[in-house]
Length: 185
Image (cartoon, rainbow, N blue to C red; front, side):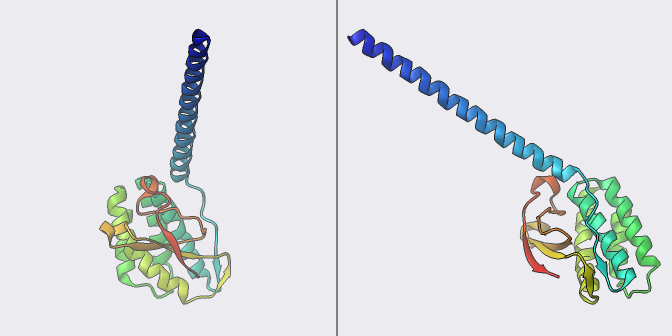
């Protein structure tokens, strides 16, 4: 009888250990899959959802800005540089009053392929874009002012997005979902 109890106890311990180890393995696989999908989401550059304003120039400026933001989310310095060149072209051909400081910051992004340099300049661009977006009537789509308290060495920074989902351009895949929606425009 003692042998039977020992055998049953041993079988139970082995079964329990195997079950726990299988759960841990499954949890690790699920966590890895979630991390992989977040990283893939940050790397895949999906075209920005288009927004429209009562002024066509504002529409072109904001949509070019959204493309730039998406390239920074993807941490793709070359594509961010190309998107900044496109935004700069739109700004140069625009009669909309834009501050020279925004053009200078966009030029800094265009002149670099280093995402960290681009992200530093992006903060000033975002500040100016918010002014542009708020002075016109949004006729199609939505814009969200999103904020990350950890951007700019924990001083915080915001950006505009056409999606309520947080995709942080200041950190990209390092901290893709860091931030919150502050305002709907």
